Image (cartoon, rainbow, N blue to C red; front, side):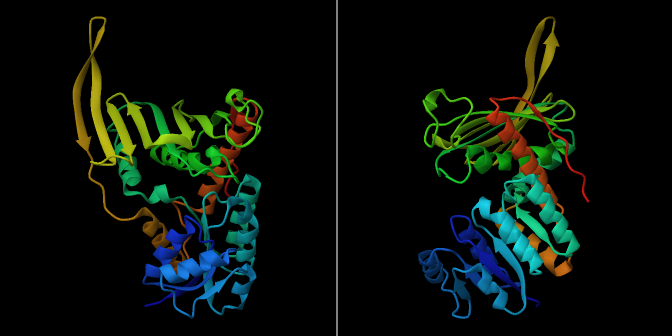
Length: 351
């Protein structure tokens, strides 16, 4: 069986999970792990009982000495992505990058074009796009089981982790935006965001509407070409952890609830029958939808390996998909910084 040599760069909270999956992949040989913190390197060596032949280093440039290295997995903080990915592509490595691709859509487009010029894979780890519940929900919407779509909503809250490099918008919203885009098969054309800062920066933060620091609470509105609107609530100060997203239609609602103890994907049937000037709920029933099992991140890693081995660009989570999401987040940031002004979007064509 053909094995490809891969290095993992960044083994923080998410990078450890990427490392775990690639170590277990039958077609991958992890040859190096890079992290700026020597203590983390020592910890993962013990945790995974890493072979002595695996290079553990704090220097990314040390990877250039490894013969036959095919790909790199980049799971460092977002602000470092652009330089690392650009260098990796110029070195001839295929790249799987943690989301977001970068913090700047211009940089994203540059990296996508560079990958195409070098005939290399550039894929972004938008894990939810590989979640069986998201795939199942896409099929439900496409089949028209919700009737006429009316609006969408999502809530993503928890008590931490609080980040310093990005705000709650950049940390959390990308997941729900990616799911809405996938289920609707559209990209938003207008966005709006307002937020509040409590923990990091801003004077009289409890009154802050246009954050001058790192926003802890953000409210997002996405408007799609057909007029459909989705509303997203994001906060990392809520002790009640919520991961819930829904689309409401004329025949029912589709709900993706990660915290559900029964099924993460539910089709809640129900509509109105008009009797005179009254609207009476009818056909109400709950349908727990069966979904495939399996870890979404494992699917991400496997798709990257398949793309590299077959030299076929990813479709679901390509660099261009990541670029569209960064464009949306950048527009939302502009709205946030302007007190909720509506920002219109036009997407750069694929080159």
